[in-house]
Image (cartoon, rainbow, N blue to C red; front, side, top):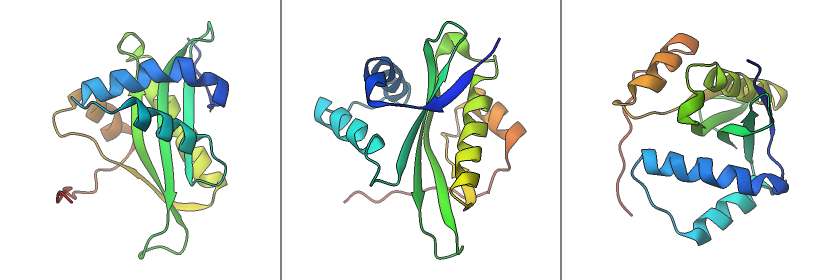
Length: 148
């Protein structure tokens, strides 16, 4: 099985949206359609430090997505690459799609001269953590959020 990964284009919206919805559903989150539009707009705006990648199966069907944000850090002179969202269609898991997306994000980070690539996941996401434990190192940090 071959997975091709490439940057998403404006014409990919119809294939991206069901994967985005499934990702949000997995995390028990609902966003407005206006936020979908804003997110898609940002992901396709060359002036934004955001990128979207899609994984495609051998039939050309989009089966995974990755959303990436580049930002500055007080700790590094280079850009930092944050893999904000990673989702693979449930029927495609275990076939290397997630790893292919992570490697494509890592390559994008290298091209952009980033000094670090990082991401978060929920502690209960055992399926994803098996992959992440294999391809990266856990930082040991715990995230906190303060409502604004």
